[in-house]
Length: 177
Image (tube, rainbow, N blue to C red):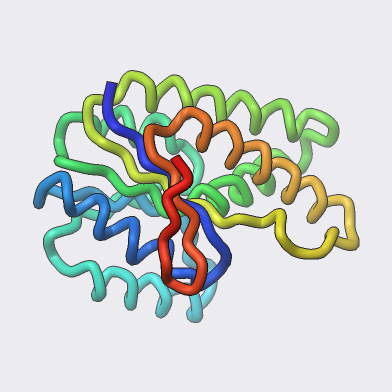
């Protein structure tokens, strides 16, 4: 079983930069598994800057939905795989399943279980990045509350399964596990 590192924190807390550094400690053949979808010009520019910052040593795979399958296909080909980020993956799933009404949470929990099973069978170390969403106010609408609840449960499950867990605050990593 590969080493799994879970990194969380607020927006702009330094999670991605820290995750890239930790992934690089495993070697130079690095994979960046991106879950973001570029749906507008601002996001296009954001992704371009991220790719530029990482440089040519990273192979980027874009997969907004089928995270477990992308990890399994990439296993053994890299020294480390960085998944950035789980929060965007969850929002992609939420919108994918939005017509499923009461089955949304069940379907996402199934996807989470597939991810956990995949991580357990990996030989390549995986660094997971996720936003901490439970430290703010209670959202004012049902969809946002559902997202916060799903993200919180996902973070708890993956942090429990990980070998190492970090939270970043103002660019400073704190090792929790």
